Image (tube, rainbow, N blue to C red):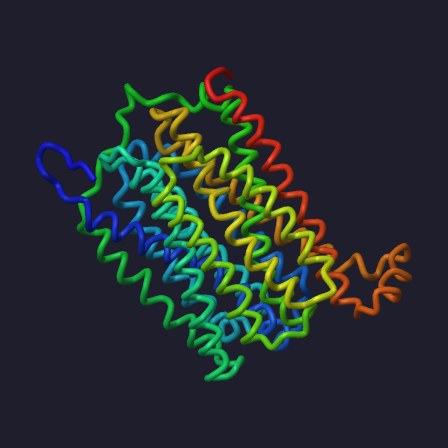
Length: 417
C-alpha cells in the first residue's frame, strides 16, 4: 500500500470500509433470514416477502443515482457518516414496526426497509470509490478484499441470527435487529475521523454523458445487473428453499446453505486477491457465470436434497467475482470517471439484485397454480410450494447466462468501443 507524500496512513480508512461492507451485508441479508418467521407470524405471501427485497434494492438504485453528483462535489465524509445513520435508524424502525403499525405491519416493514436501504445505497455508492481513491497499485486486489467483507458479514448475519432465533424463539426477532444496530453506530463514529483521499478533481473527471455513450460501459452495467441478480437471488432464497423445498430444519438450511454460500462467496474473493495478478478477471468471471448457471439448474432439478443444497452453496463461489469484477473492469477502462461511474454500476447491480429475487417470488407463488403445469406438479410428487420454489430457481438460470454473454462481449472489446 503506497501512501501520499505527507505519509498519511489509510489503514484506519480501509478498516472502516471493511466494516462498512459488513454493515451492507446486515442490511441486505437480515430480512431474508426472517422470511419464514414473518410469514408464520403475519401471514405474508412469498411475493410480499420478495417485494421487501425489491424495495430494498430499488431504494438503493435511486440513492445511488441521486447522490453521485453531490459526492463528487462535496466529498465523501458527510455522506458516508449519514449512510450509517440511516442504516441504524432503519434497523430500529423495522424492529418496532409491529408496535407502531399494529393494523398494517407490512407497511411498517416496507417503510423501515426504505430507511435502511437509503443507508445501504450510500454505502454501496461510497465504499468502492473511497477504496479506489486510496493510492495503491493493486486496485483489483483491494476491491476483492473489500467485497469479501460483505461475504464475511453475510456469514456472521446468517449464523448469529439463526442461532439467536433458535435460542430465543422466532417471535423474538425484534431484539436481534436491535443488537445488529450496534455495528453501523460504531462505524458512524469511526468514519467521522478517519482520513479520506479526495475524489477526482472536476477538471480531470470524465463526464457521465461521455461515459454512458460508450458501448463498453453499457455492457458492463448489464454484466453487473445480471451478475448481481445471480448472486443475490441464490443468497436471498436459499434459506426458504432449503426449509420448504428440501424439508430441512431452518437451522440446518441457514447454516449449511446460506452461511456456506456466503463463505464460498468470501473465499472466492479472497482467493482472487491472492492469485488474481496471474489471471484475467474477465476470464475468471466468465467461468464463474457458467458454473453459476449449472448450480441453478442442479439446485432446481436434483431429486437428491443434499446435491441440491450443495449446488446452492457452490453458487457462492461461482458468483463471487461477478459483482466486484465488473467494477474492476469498468474502473480499469475508465479510470477518470469518478463517483458517477460507481453510482451507475451500483445502480445496475441493484436493479438485478432487486428484480431477481422478486421474480423468483412471483414464480414461486403463481406457477404451481397455472392450469398448464397442474399435471406436472402431480407427476413430480412435490407439494405445490416445493414445485414453485424449484421453478423459481430454474428461471434464475437466465441471470448468469446473460452475464456470461456480456462478459464475453467485453473480453472481445477491451480496447476499442
